[in-house]
Length: 402
Image 1 (tube, rainbow, N blue to C red):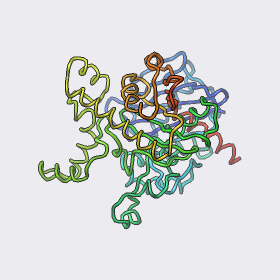
Image 2 (cartoon, one colour):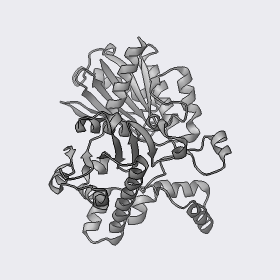
Image 3 (spheres, rainbow, N blue to C red):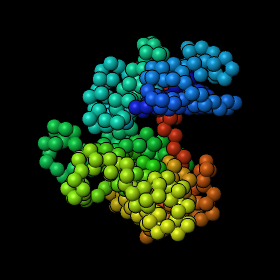
Image 4 (tube, rainbow, N blue to C red):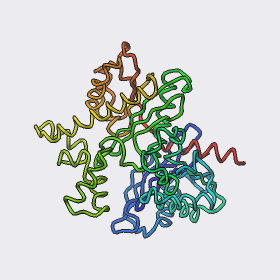
C-alpha cells in the first residue's frame, strides 16, 4: 500500500510517497512559492535530486507537478497513479471537534474552514490542499486528515482552560489546544518501545525543540498538559516567538510604541524569541557561532532558552507525579548536544545524569540513549517522523473503511 502524505501551507506543499510495506520513503520534496514569482518544485528519491523552476499559480497546479514527477518516465517511482492507494493530509487545528484522525468528507472540509479563526495562517491552507488534492487525484481516491491538536485532546479542563471569563470559551473557543501533537505522539510511542514497556505504564515528558517548540506531559499514553496554547505562541521562547509572558507586557508595549494589535502580534510571533534577545538570528547555528565569538546577547538567549525548557520539564514532573523518561526531538533537540546537556544539568535534582560521550555522539541522524545507567530518569534522543504517523493513520483508516 502506497500513501502520499501532504503538508500544505499557504504558499508551499510538502509531500512524501511512502510504501507501507516496510514503511519506505519512495520520494519526497516540496513545492515552494506557490502563487508567486520564482516558484519551484524539489523532488528527491534514492537516485534523483531535482530542483526545477516551474510556474505554479495555485495548489492544484502544484499537485499536478507532484503527480507528474512521481510518474516521470526517467525519475518517477510509480508507473500509474492507481499505485497510490490514499492521500494523508496534515491539518493544524482540529479544535474541540476532531479528537482523532478521520476520513475526509465535505463536512470535514467545511469544519476545518470554520475552525480557521483559531489558526488563520494554517487551516485555510490545509483545507485548500485537501480540495486541490481531490481535484487532481479524483473523488475516488481515499483522503484522510490528521490533526496536530488531536493528540492533546485528552487534557483535563484544569490544564486547558484559561482564567479569563468563561464566556470567551463558550463563545470563541478560547482554551489551550496544543500543537506538534503528531510529533509528540510518535516519539512517546517510540520511547516506550525502546524502554521495552507498555506506554500505558509510563510517565513521559517529550520535548519538541526546533524553530517552533513545545513540551508535553504524557501519562499512560494520554496527554495531561502541553506548553503551546490557543496558538503556537504560548510556552517557552522559540526562534522568533516570545513564548509565555506577563499579559500586561502586550498592552504596555502597544501603548508606549503606539502600535496596533496586528503590529504587536507580529513582534511577538516574528521578532521575539532567540532572534529578539540575541539580535543575531533566529537560526541557532548563527547564535551558537556568535556566542563562541563572545557575543553576550547570544549567550543570554541560550541561557534563557535552556532555563525555560528545564523549568517546564520540572513542572511537568510534578504534574505527572514522577517521570520515567524524557525525550528530545526536532531540529535543536536532535542536533544540539549543548542544549540537551545544559537542560539536564538543571534536572540533576530529579536524579537525571547524562552520559557526555553518548550525548555528543547523538547528532545528525544518530539517535539513542543520552542518560547514564545511574540516571533515575531515562533520557533519549528520538528523531521525530510526523509523516510516518500520518501515513500509518491513513492506512489504518482506509483499510477499516472498506
